[in-house]
Image (cartoon, rainbow, N blue to C red; front, side):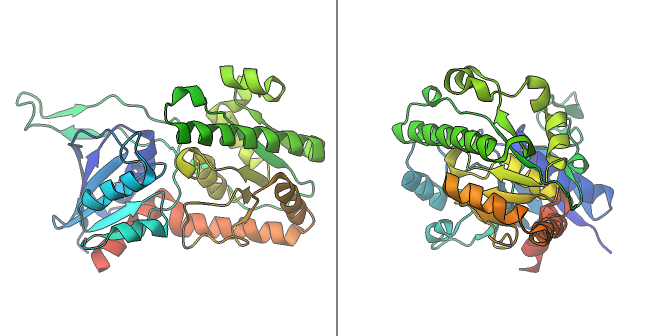
Length: 342
């Protein structure tokens, strides 16, 4: 069977690590021939192109939301998207149907790219003979997570004593100038502090949660700060596996944060604020429960605690979802099949 030829742009961004890892696993399995080339263009955004069988042009977009250009409104960004990023297939991490309204007259097909999270991948060797005549290839230094994708994976389990987890960080409104963005950060911070306080009060010892240490956390909620040794990545991944119910809130630009994908990889039962960016295969009530208020959050936690079979079924659903859609090699393989088959 002939291998699929894949030429993939490389750009140093943790948002893209899932994409690179997926391609590298498929190469090791003998499914594809893989070559990385240096990303071109002036926009330093986690968006890359790939060319399949020297014919099909794919774009992978792992942006947090509709923010292709900074300090512009959502409408201005969507118009920018409409007039740029020409390709055959566009895979968008932060996907919802609004994108389709801005694809009129374009030949590209827009797809959901599933949830995003950070993981380690092999160093990327770039052939830059065209740029440096005296050097055949060069290893570029870049950020790379120490956590392998397999470290996130876990199986569904039936704990007799339920354990609930929600740890989060705060975003400083003073770091941005746009009024809408400042307000978004204030709401995110307020909700996260409120949810942690209420869960501590309601669930006591079976709840683990708090805030990452920062100047803002010390200012707004010093009593909720978690020791740094417990918020390191390795410690956090271990903690996720020790809890069967995990809570998530929306991140910047209404995005689904990395913890969402991590929860799915670990087959946890999930409660989240209503998702603005969705996946057609990830279903409320089946894979997660929505909670748009403190009362709804508490009630849904009890709904899961009081029905062990329902909790276990949700964990099984997320185990299946991960292995059908989200595991990095499967995520990339699904995208290639969609592009080639169409």
